[in-house]
Length: 146
Image (cartoon, rainbow, N blue to C red; front, side, top):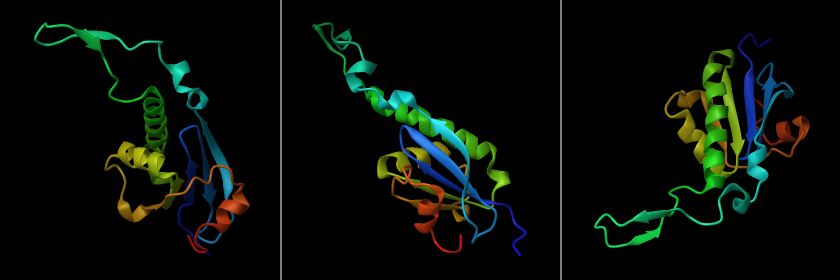
């Protein structure tokens, strides 16, 4: 019989994430937390003003439109990844291991948000968006023994 901490599984994308737990490495998954990011469903045009801001050239010769360094959509995804990462870091002692399944871009944002606050031997990543799956379907895509 397994006497360790539960294993956590996160299925996430920029707009939605679910955390699941397995009581043992071979157990079924039980959903226990949902994160939602409704702003991620908005269109880019709904997140910005009509025109970019204006700025003066450093030499004072003229004005030009300012371009954003990060798109509003990506900024929203970054903030959502940071929210999830804060929760995971705060609760990392409650789990034996964390499995993360997210599309490549959002997985990168999560990895960046965890920012070295995670032991690599306790983290397993899948570059797949499994947010639409129920617990049984998600479990079937993970190793038999977590």
